[in-house]
Length: 93
Image 1 (cartoon, helix red, strand yellow):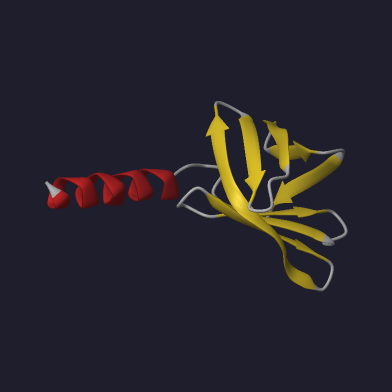
Image 2: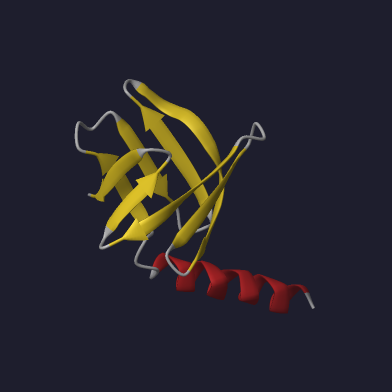
């Protein structure tokens, strides 16, 4: 039974790694950086703070929901290859 569970997790991670939104998203000035990891976790850097926020995310279609480890929540939308999040615009790097 354990092997089946591990296999399902490996398949889920592999499928997510191929997801078009996994990777680095950056504001035009480079100050805000969101790294969407294949394991449904994210790391947000702000200026010189490389790990300003961390948490999990879920993408449904072109909508993204964030749950920060501190309890803060946010969301955004991918529109024409650009991430619109909390009044910010982030571009794929």
